[in-house]
Length: 392
Image (cartoon, rainbow, N blue to C red):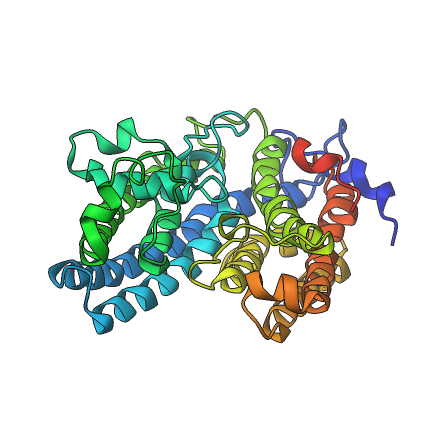
């Protein structure tokens, strides 16, 4: 369906007039601008902050289970299983937040008001199993300033995934520490388990600190980025169009990360007969790759609909394109069904049942094709540069 003729109707500017009047410069009705402002005002309180609240509550359970595991020096099977289950629950919620990289959570290099908080909590695919082993063997987390002195590839939720699920052998090659200097062998399996449990607990505390910082950044009682996104006096955005585009950019996580990095990249390797490395397929250590994709789709749905508030679906309906909104929502449901249809963990399915992952890829692509096509055209929004050249 080609909808390009409506693009000029929604080039948003600062509000002019009232009621249902029309600005002379853009043809935008004030009613439509009101919907946009409602959408922007609801992103924080109706979408991001409730999801952060759930994430912080899940961290309570993860912390408790890691404390139990640490008390058992990492060698109690029941305590380990409990910690693994709590980690999976926490990751499911974080994967929803992955799609909400707007303002403080987003990159400082590419996003307005970006503060890189996302990478401090979860930096995949930037993760280095050998570096985590080096931290584990040298007990670096006990040094003051560990998080400031260490790169993100050795801490965060992705590091906890490795610590809770990896085999006792180190991922480091023989020519580097802790293999070359014998530190790993000196620890033994019990020592490795104990250090991993203690490190995981320390990393969870760091994650909580960053999550609280993100919550405070969005909270009206903190830095109130929710209000800034809604164009209060402290807003970093020049117009409602720019602010709306920032929210739109968040949705493109489903394109550049879920579709291209989590699905297309390992599929391409498998098609060439190559076995992807464990850190190249998300969730390989814990077998949660499909949970991650389902979480991304759920987070996309929350951001698209505005949760209990006003979302892109309402804006499209206001513009007379409720059919497009219904298509996006139906495509999200179809992609979630495709996730459920995959029978093996993602890192196994890309090799053994690639046809199921192909079907999942196609289902996710249905969503992102509309995102890049009709949705961008109707709302006259810019596609992020990293996705603009992708014709897949």
